Length: 308
Image (tube, rainbow, N blue to C red; front, side, top):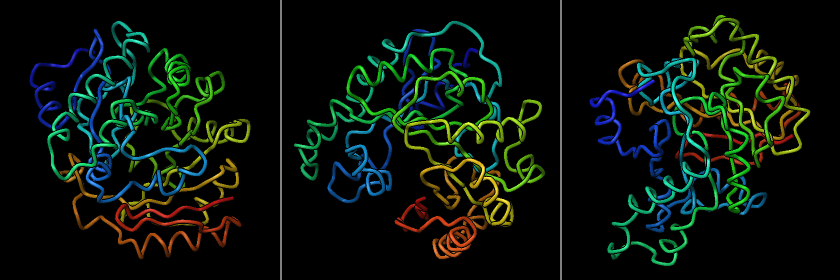
């Protein structure tokens, strides 16, 4: 799939930088990276997982190897889902090329902080060499044919790879090189809600997700189920989610409230945003049903951490 000049312009105006010869990869600076550089705040990933992986918000590379390719058109997604294609099309860039250009683009995007008197210069220097790759920016990364090699390339460069997937490709997960941390987006307690929330572009999407969840216990890396919860849509039926958690047996569960940002504002909007109090209340019900324990929370992101 080739992005049109207008689509590229819109992405770049939104802070993206396309990388690679075939422009199916991209980088964007996370706002928490910027906040960390200004010594204002760190992201919940650092708060929750720094002790496990040693990660720092200012050294995070937020990227994707599959910008226009995704099996879903989730209504809560901040991305422009109109460009989504459920099947890979065109040439495939090598992981080394993607990472080389992604890191260079990251440096260019952060260059303004060098002259910012409010920026922490030690952090800025460290940020020139990322130590975490959040493979989650846009699209579905398991559609990238060389996703295993990309994870290996991250490890070779001493970059911690976090992989976020929608779980639509269990056959890829069966064979993949394990990341340091694997997230599976688990955004519905049953099939009908999944269809309404995710607008899948492929057949048997609920079955695909459940097959991926069944694979989770076989992974040696840190595993997480992320529950993006939308008021009046999928913030319901904790017993349904509990069954999925019991099936997957992840190390952690992240119930996280939907935030009306990006393109999602035209599909949903602020009225669908649960409060942090509502997310915490729902999380307590999940804890009671699963035996997991609430071990963390981060109100600015409306997220709670449940640990096994």
